[in-house]
Image (tube, one colour):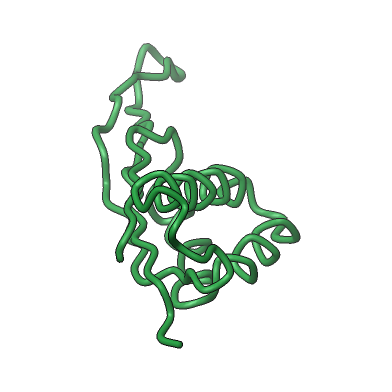
Length: 114
């Protein structure tokens, strides 16, 4: 049984989030959370929270029938969200664009074969 969770409009660039997502892709949930706990990147906190949410979705969806210890990260993908466009004043009356990027993260957990 697959369980999904989505995290949308994260105010972090997709490039930064995809580095952290690649660390946990294919790992068991316990190992993934352990890796994210000790990863010194800011993107590790929202990804860990998303995986915990997917585990909660799995237990709720199956009404407690799923074994949490056998779950693993089947797929995790990072897509680009909407970009906020701002302008920064510069010298001699000029303005330079500032792009504040956001991301959408999708995770699918599945049970490992026994």
